[in-house]
Length: 167
Image 1: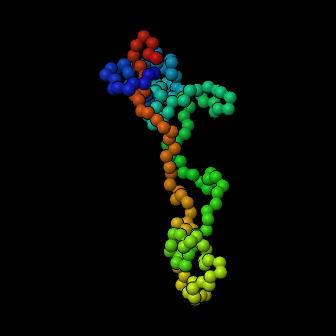
Image 2 (image 1 turned 45 degrees about the horizontal axis):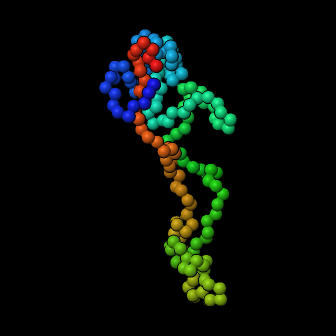
Image 3 (image 1 turned 90 degrees about the horizontal axis):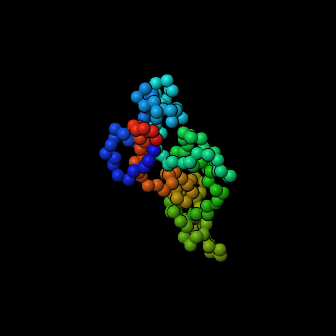
């Protein structure tokens, strides 16, 4: 396998590492190298590695790192965080006399100390109330997935399927 930064002209000898199924009968030497670690039934087919949309990671073990087996895949391009995954934090309460405002005036809850609130500053029991602005009291996030990809540079990952030793 190699990666190329230009298009490969010899596509009969080199093919993309795109997970395609290959015939064992047509490519016995390559099957002897890869086996079914990337897929296939092992009777008539085997699969090439699939590096489309994936970062290559070396197999093996190292202290403090996850052990990966050759051919193993993991991870996902997007992830939706849950409340349990967010770090502990708090949001300051925000309010003012008009419920639909995003921020209180002078950063006070109702009225400044020592000042009498306006007569109409509180709703009566019979009042209809008002919906508070979502920025002032709403939840953070929205449950949408966000990008989970590390920084990357795209190349053509290709594998040789024809030659004395096709690897």
